[in-house]
Length: 530
Image (cartoon, rainbow, N blue to C red):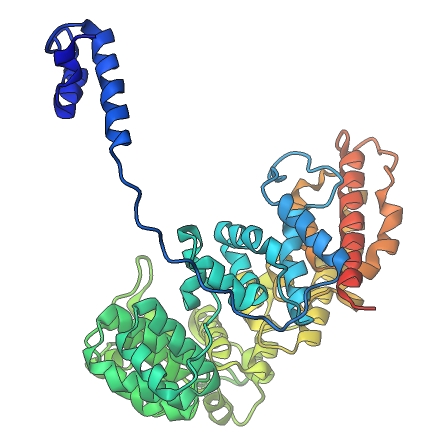
């Protein structure tokens, strides 16, 4: 190998390689082969001259976690679930009869956390990897991993999500003394401050508000929005003076959020102002023989309305007056309407006819008000009877809005209402409603879901359109239903008008459902100490 090319500077070799030896022959000749030899020799020489870096500090000892580890069988089950985490899912086509182990991880973690177990040390890396890939697992994983999980996360940049507290879905523990709380609030990173405020708000709402007001004037607009939104937790009349002040904030988003929170306080001054405006728009109609509702939408949106959170410019396709009316009504305390309409009940008010085609707009605004104010009586009135067709019900035909109204009701009442809905209308429109029902589905709701699936199978169609409900059933149905479902795992005789092969697909889907329910029962048993 020519000595001159071997001793050429590294930058010159790189330039020659980029341009090509035809356009820039290497110094000393040798062609492409000589250039590669020189690069290899240069690389070896550079590596040989490297000095070892100073040794990094050894990590300290992992903190103690006094919680017990799960029983051996439960630990083996968790290892099996985590090992299957990266297996291909059944997103399309036939999923097979085997349970989807990946979807059982959240249930296993929730059951382990309820029983006060801590994560086995050998499974911490796999748990953190799973939580990195799936944000929905993070709150349960971080609670299960405990202080040792946070200690380990500091050693791997890929697990930094665990150190971000609120952004990972689990507020970090509060510092032990008030001085440390103040220092973290004043000097911490934004994510740390959000996590601190969320944790403090959950335990001491007034103290969190005091901390927030101490630096409010110097906060950035985007930070103020996140901070004021944290006041949803523990919202009370104590927060009203601060939120009233925030109505004059220079950020429109902050003003809007403050107004929304104030309207969730029925006794607030903003609620009274909104009620005064709404009462001038919605009143009993005294012109007819039967009681009804008269509506006269606002003709303008003045500055005072905008300060109280009314957005002046409607979305595309919405009329200004109906847009303003809806915002006024949804921010008005619902108790206002009982006094306005002769002390009628919410159900009686909702049943009144509304003049001039304003019923849909008015009922939709009442739905939003019931959700915001968490008023169960109005939620029941607006939901109506579960057997009534959604399109002709008293409140709204939107299943998304109905699911929010259901979320206000007590858990058992929710399940009974959805069971009645499924019995009357089937499963095709029930998916969103099932998502707010308490789990495991038992009693009337569990029976209604199983019966509706049986009816869908007998109809002879393919089960694809019910795959979402099937997936929910695997996670939410009471495992005790497995024996009742066993009869549905056989392949029925296909009728002449049935879709080809539909019986086999349904049989496979029910086999998967039964095996998943039984595995869930085994998981609970394994986590229950003898």
